[in-house]
Length: 453
Image (tube, rainbow, N blue to C red; front, side, top):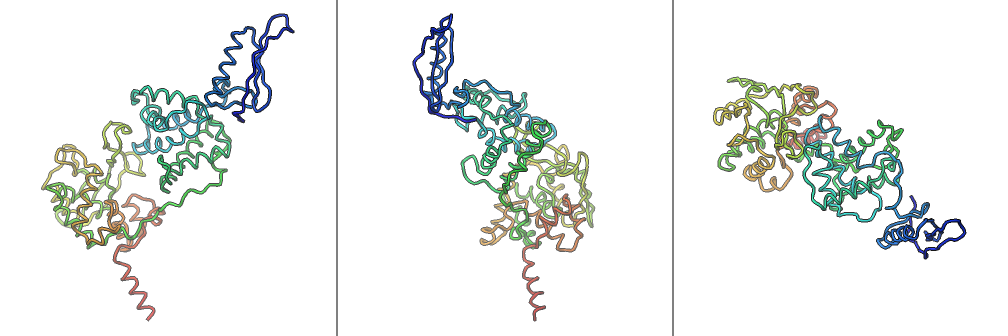
């Protein structure tokens, strides 16, 4: 649509060349004359007043019709981007995890507020996002009451949201891609964030293809490279077995009881390569812990942490199927005697929850990620040297899982078996986790040096 702000108005003329009196409203748009005839002076005055008011408010005028955008008749153009975004998020709600729902909504927040027409009365962008987060992108039974400001913002957005067909234009798609490449604060977004947002945008357009709005996904025709994301484990984060033991031994010294209660959880992440959410849902029935020799963990569920508004239960933690697994599919992990002993000691000292969970707070709740991350950082300060604390070595609890998988691979365990225990495909395993453990570089360099001599 071509628009301009170059508008001029003329006085109303009364026409006498017809049998009945007629009143002519005349104006120019980009120096092109426009006119409209009315039967009464009152109708003509009202129409001209509307035109003048639109120009006074800084509204753009359409070159073809000569009318301000607010007075244009809406063209039948299918669903708006806002409507398609709502359909996409709510259509996936039932089968998605809480984090996926949040990721979908977060990815669309900036796109919805950017892909709009230039209509007067545009509200503050943060007010628009609040209305989307708490209302428009939520199921009806989860929507919160909107403030007057949010109601006005959402009303404006319904009118201004571009039709989905506008995304068939390269300029609109590039505007969308530029939008997902920055944060809400206007700074360059992280590579992984950009790639996740683009994936959501791509999937939304795939839905539009299914609805016959497009013959093919228009995003596939745009030559745009997302920023390169880090998809491999940094070897500097991986601890060797001696460092892992030092860290686990230091855990009971953190806090009055919290560090001691969490030692077995961190041990499961290191010795069994469990994800933190898998360890959080580990129950006594899942553990075979003989008095000697190797034991076995049979994982059935995970307990990820999410935001209450996105979970089914309205709680921050809820039980879900294992990642990359079908519902009720399990994963078996043989565990070494050292972990068997740690788990037996943990159960003897703290028992289990009423539902059989091994790891819970003193009041029976689940540990938040911030709680166990705090304990981990305190443990690093106790067990590592100042230089190691300042480095990325075991900077996050999840790095223990990286260390476990790297250790298994470097010990010669076949990749399919490592992938099976870690819950990954072989190709992902070799691409992401196949890294040397800390301290092995000197050994390898020694071998190379011997060969050179």
